[in-house]
Image 1 (tube, rainbow, N blue to C red):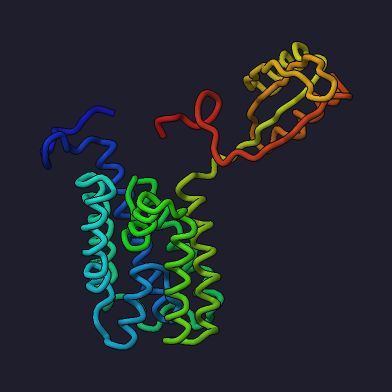
Image 2: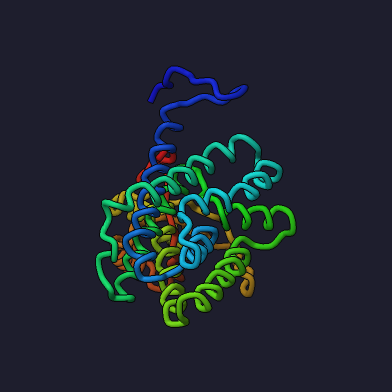
Amino acid sequence: MGILTPIRLSGEFRFTWRAARDYALIFAGAALQALALRVFLVPAQLASGGVSGLAQILNHYSGWPIGLMVVLGNLPLFILGWRFLGGPHFVFRTAFAVLAFSMLVDIPVPVLPEGGITDDLILNALYGGVVSGFGFGLVYRGQGTSGGSDILARILSNWRGISVSQSYLFTDALIILLAGLSFSWENALYALVMLYVSGLAAEAMSQGLNVARTALIVTQSPDQLTEQIIAILDRGVTMLPARGGYTQEVRTVLYCVVMPSEVPRLKALVHQIDEKAFMVIGHAHEALGEGFRSLSG
């Protein structure tokens, strides 16, 4: 697509169609996160992770607005993020995500069901995890972050070499501990389930459902097998020269990527052409390029 009329923000910053799409994704993601918090998590006293989870706990004792506390809790992290994570580009998108989430958490409260949709903790944990996870995924697809533990995890990773997963584990464990002391240990355990489901949903949304299978095939008939894969499956094949570590024999290894539904036909082709072939099927989170989703998507 073309470029919108540039809107100067500072120096080289300007809005493009891609940037407009990213901000739309971030807003949609923030809306889903706010909906999950208000409809499923707060009524069931299930603490989410990071700053929003801490805000839930403080709201339980003080009654202060959750959205306002999320903004205040993120202010020192914004300052650190500006210093360590790329300045204005980082702050614009993260601030937009946090402000949108905070406003959507507090403003629509009167029009939402006061006690949520259900009293069932399992349903609240599952649906809260799925909806909030989809929200996180949309924010990530918009090249943004949701603030809070996202910022802290990236800072610790860049500054001290602590992995992002370890940072999340530490911050979320601390929030779950406080939730257990504030609400109940049963609710804290269900909150762990919610966080796990949320992570799965966020990964599915951010990486897409364009899963594929990779195949490595060691065969004595590489040319014939390559020809059949191209002709029957309409998939490209890369021929890699290799040498056996034990026999020292020179062989050709074929590498190709197929959809999951094409794996049985690929196996049948290999078996038909070379019964002694060695084949390894792997899992690819996403395949981009010719024959699959476009790299620009």
